Image (tube, rainbow, N blue to C red; front, top):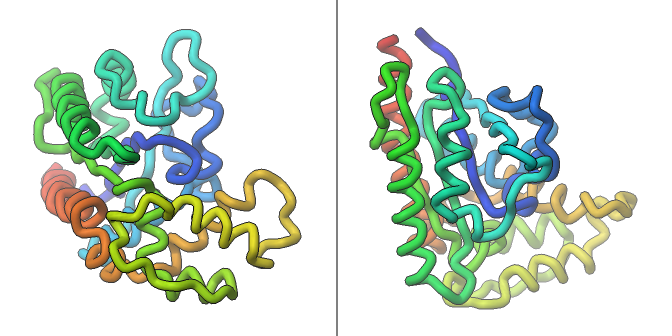
Length: 246
């Protein structure tokens, strides 16, 4: 069988997930997210998959939990009880892979520990059609210190898109100002200036995800993006082989 890999992507919020993040309609649970509603992280992952010969994937909307109309955001997505409910709500037919990313902020070691526990929770609650736990189809990643760091890694692409002069940040994963730098650059730029809505910063991030050089991002963010993508691609290859053998 040849079909797109179906991915359940859990991330902190709008910077990563774009307009797909705010509200969850019960009828959309388990369905592929409309590509016009995707965000920057969806795009980076799809581009990486295409680079290893996986032609397509679908990102799957999760099911709303009881009394929940809006997705949880921020690092609280790592909370085990919450994650268990999210993961177990997906049926085996809806999701092949589950990916989760979180920002390190100023608490790298603590977030690494919590991410590992979150992955254990995901693997304990991700079942196949025979109700057996799937322990090799989930990946976690940490953006150091935040998701904007990954987009700023290719500062030349950012400068070109936003038509601004930007200086390269020497120790990118050691910087605590990448989010503020990208926010200020977005404010200063005339790119998409006709869009006065609160969606403009999300659109800028999304467009950057199509432009940045993926090899540059992996090289300049080896601890965060590089490690995450390496694990993603290894898991995606195994997932693709399983799908083709169905």
